[in-house]
Amino acid sequence: MIGELPDTLTVGGKAYPIRSDFRAALIIFQALDDPELDGREKAAVMISSLYERPEEIAAEHIEEALERASWFLDGGDMPKTELHAKTLDWEQDEGMIFAAVNKTAGFEVRSVKYMHWWTFLGYFSESGDTLLSTVMHLRQKMAKKKSLDKWEREFVNEHRRLVMIQRKKTDEEKAEEDFVNSLFGQ
Image (cartoon, rainbow, N blue to C red; front, side, top):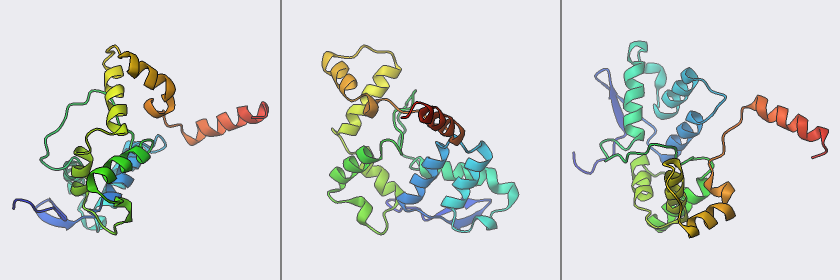
């Protein structure tokens, strides 16, 4: 029906209740970006975080459950924008994301007990002219190797840590870096 927000996903002909709050989606995105998790572990996080009773999903329907979860996380039948490079990191960009969503919503969305993922995604999609949209535009332009205007170059130089998506390090890489820093008293 038009205007309804799904709270179940049909897998193998059966409707399974889901955690449709935006926080569940953000947990899943964080896991999908985690370099410590392999594909199987990421799939397990997606299933266990989204479906309220994941143990009820038959093993032969797990692939379909993942496909339906991806459909839900992508906003269902929402028009997709073609991004050829990663322009958003949900964890790194958290502050900018919530600022943009709050601006559109007109209130602090983190303070509500429940907000459907698609509502959050709608606010996010309509956030318009924000710091986040500027950063994502610059990331896309740099990924396509397009030349930056003077103000864009200056912005990138002044806000490099904000604009450049940081590669997530594994725990092993972090430990090695900490060890090297400790040798040099840093």
